[in-house]
Image (cartoon, rainbow, N blue to C red; front, side):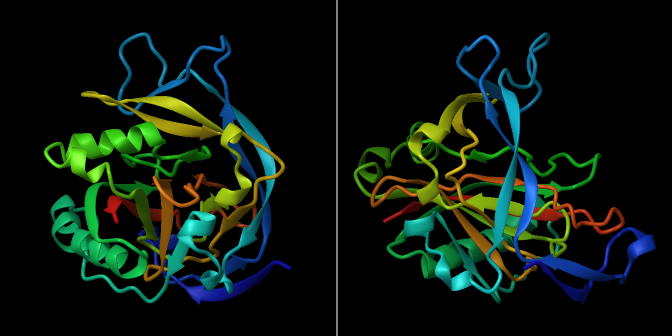
Length: 288
């Protein structure tokens, strides 16, 4: 049953400052955007930055599908990285107070994330944080929430990451367990607009996942689009707060190799005057 919880939040928009918001809780039905192949059945590709003149941002298309999305809230301890491909952590403070500053993010928040992974991820012995993305639901924002079901890294991309970021150690590191894990959190929680949906890795078959050439200005990686399928099981964490963390595993070279498709989605219960979601995800190579 869907319920609501009343809270008070603030926003830069003066018309809703200190407004009481009834946080939507419980399962919800919404439209998720899935992968559809290029019209000419060619290999799919996507440009990370501005594409060359005459080319579109991507050559593949989209398949919207209505999906039932369950609520993690109240069941947080039920999800494990090795099994579901995602897990949670609560009551995690941060000393970083300016997420508009890359310097603060890297000097203050990165060490916090590294410590969190070493503490919470079983078997983790070493962490290398290779990038982060701040997203804001604002038409003027550099990065906005992504409305397409995807996995950030394929196996090919994960192994490339090791060689790219740690070339002198790659031969040795590639002989051990390698994981890519994203740590996701809101910056203006509780999240009441464009929450993040994640799929139980066990419910996503290999044939649901399609490698997509991911073209950076200086190199080419690979991300994954997700095909819609009735057997998939999707979750979100209602009203996620600033001291809550969602661990998303994109790749695991060992075990059951759980990987987590995810996407922003529009909650039909969200009011137009509620604050748009702001969030940060930090991406990590995890060894051991």
